[in-house]
Image (tube, rainbow, N blue to C red):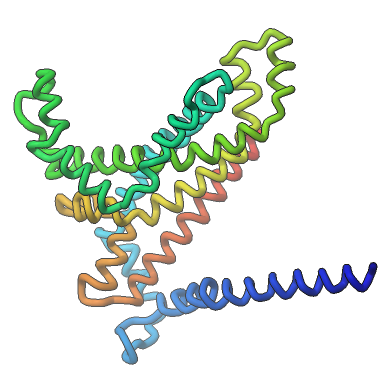
Length: 291
């Protein structure tokens, strides 16, 4: 019995070790290399150490601060609305009385499996000068002339936010559905016997039990927004000017579109990493204080 258990333990550690090697080689080692690269300048075999010059350059880089502001603006609007909408939709679709729940879940989730390029082009067409949105606004006499959504700095941000909400709300809905289905129905039955209404049940039972999922989806959504690239490139190409450009797009431009500056691009990447860690710790502290 002991010999068999020891063999299982060795097999388990062998599997974990294999996975650990892959994670180390393809995950942590490139991260370490990128960190070292952030202290260098030049390209190819001509890289040379330049100390903290890249980080000093970052502090005075106006384009970086603009792109960081745009990215945080998307996060500030998209994440709360998306998580709240995903939670409410999940609660509605988790009701066993509702008919065709599977159909509704599939329809809401479908945008998540749509090609990023395809749905970006779709939204670009919808919000173009001769697109459906402008035709609808003019038909309802809400505007007198077509609105240049993509060409206007403010409206272009609005289009990006709407596109992100449309695509990702269904994805996070799945997490809340899974969490709701793991809640013991006896809890709701007890609340009903105590005379709790729908609102009280949601605020006093459902919401506290979903707090870990709110934290998880918040971190996932933050990571996704801070790496936002495809939607902005295909919708607005960062324009007009730098009005919608994100940090990820700026990193790409530094690496491939402008004169290649891999060291500085790595520096910007690590600034994003520090930002993610800081916001994650703040979120964790806020949720802990409310427990």
